Image (tube, rainbow, N blue to C red; front, top):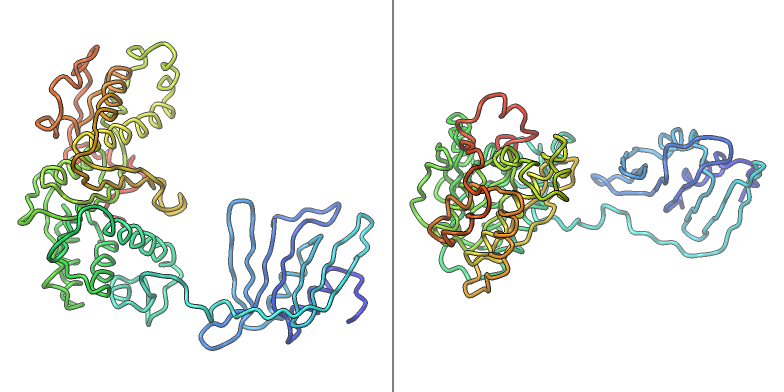
Length: 424
């Protein structure tokens, strides 16, 4: 091997070699700046051609680029002042670092490095990129996910992973699985659910509900185009007015605004749905009820400033929703659904009906929170016949300002929502 005097020369020579396998470049040479924490270079197989893939890592993000030839990748790599390099050739491993005075120290050892080309291994994706519905919805083209559809594709697969795990728990479902998607918007996840169940050999009937007539018509046309019209239909309705023809086994709702999420949860409870997957959006109802002067002294600063009051309203709303669902016989967990770069509203409430559960702790939690913050969530009103009448009779209970459901909120309030059902 040549006697290199610079890191750039070493990287240029090794990456362009036929026997190159992988390299990990990191650190910053002394006295210079480097925006990248780590860079990984490797060979990948894409569309029957070997390319050079470079993944640039910062503390928070990772950016991947594929180059048809190694020379094009090297042009960018040699511009970065890396301090250390771990390079794997087929029969040699090279370790290099730049010393304080700029001298390059290189060591190598004989070692067999046989790394499978990254894309020779099939990724564990529930929904393959060539699924027909992805093409119909504009996420992919000719079996390849579009660059603009990558985030949506990852969101779809994460949702299906959660959906599959959810249906495997709780009471067994008999007959076709009945799914109701409320506030379905463009219905990416609705179509994904149908595809996954059909491919898994599970019979299903799925109804998507959205208030927008044009969106509903477009979704029905897409279902017909796929030949799914016998088990996938869309209806136009406000969530609070919708009455399902059959009791659903699974109720889905992602990013229904404000109290529309409460309408979704109440509908699921009223029809004894086995499972619920709901990702709330904005939480105006409880945010407007919070009054610092009515809270215990030690908690007033939690709602004194607008941004803290908003965040407290978010947490309090979903905590009360989870506890109320536990009170009426559901096992509930709340977790992050997708990374925040996909949507700032990324929490998911998952509930599975589990009759016979002890509800004493949940009831005590609701009473404590209602008394401490003097609030009455919309879901409590909708489930009034299923919970104790005195649950919200603490100090000032019932005095909180009533907020109308999402469908009659002002346009200004709607515009402040960071996301909505129609985008998903």
